[in-house]
Image (cartoon, rainbow, N blue to C red; front, side, top):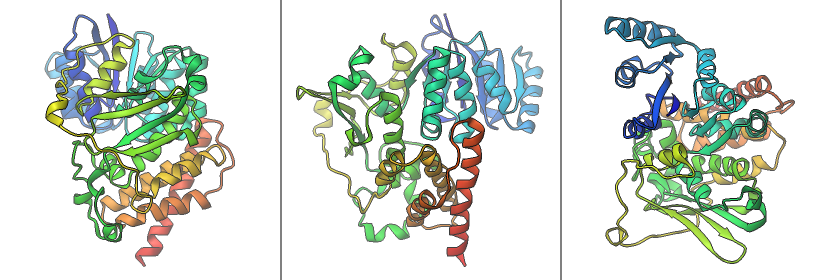
Length: 391
């Protein structure tokens, strides 16, 4: 039996992971669960899966969870803080770590799992966007294994040669598909007036507000370009993006002989999660079966650069010094938060991100500490830019 630690267990990816694990109690046990502050959901998960550890970053939430578990006679030990997340990620009793804590907050625990030689199921794209070179080095040094959980990167993995040494030689290019989000057909001249509610109304997926806005700007795809570059060792100019509104073809791999291998399935994150858990074997995920006759048609289109200018920022950042991708990610987190709080317009997101990428000095990106300092510095530029605009 494999022991699994789920970091970010109260979010959508974490809950889907536990759904899949619950289908296979003979193959997987839950060693630890971790989250930021949602003690109510984590309590329910602890009572069902009886992990050895439960971690909450927020101290008050951890205290509430501990009291609730004790009242119910649970043996689960409650830990508190970011260091505790890293502790359970590297725990010798853990075989597999689902890294699903959103944003830079999940970077330390993802790195800890990589250094400890775990099978890391990576749903926290920031780990590779912010610290790609550092993360891949930690993975090599620790002797661990990295399997992507984003549906696009999981699809690419499934289409790549089984022999990883052939990846760079056999593959001509990879294509990430994108739904186009809620503004796929909106006139670019009208984007400035789009509201957070409109940006979060994704046509295919039910997601959190930050990732929903990233889908609307297509910054999520920009970050996935950076992630794919590190995951598969593919040069940026060989990573393409296609709009595919049905979200049935999750991504494609083009070979030098003209073959194109695509992975298809209904939009359900349980599929890539099950793939990562069992790879290279297959595991029932609980997802519905794909009926192509019922789908009827599959459409594809080039992304409109005027509507989705964020894509070009990914290629720009990959062509700059190490740390530029960390700057882009930090600026985007800051500007999306401002938009969701009503302090910025939708089009301000791209303007502030582009400005931060141009203006933030990059002195050092060789360590986690240096990257955290760079992250903090990169956030100051959009804050000042948005404050200036507000005046």
